[in-house]
Length: 66
Image (tube, rainbow, N blue to C red):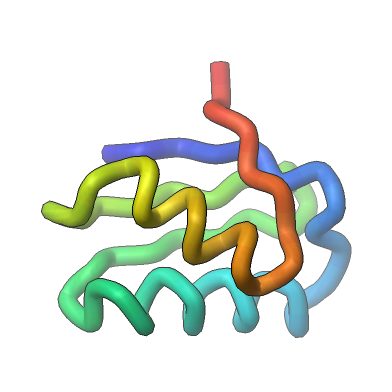
């Protein structure tokens, strides 16, 4: 399970855009978004760098969650 903090995520639209971006490279991915905590959890077989790049491509800067 990968977890990212996305400080600029602020609404449901943001969450949907991130989920679409991840699912765009891995339709089988399990994506859980917590807008209030500004966290994204992803279960996928795709390389973490590709997932982070997909989120960046949607306009958000993911940071590894501590």
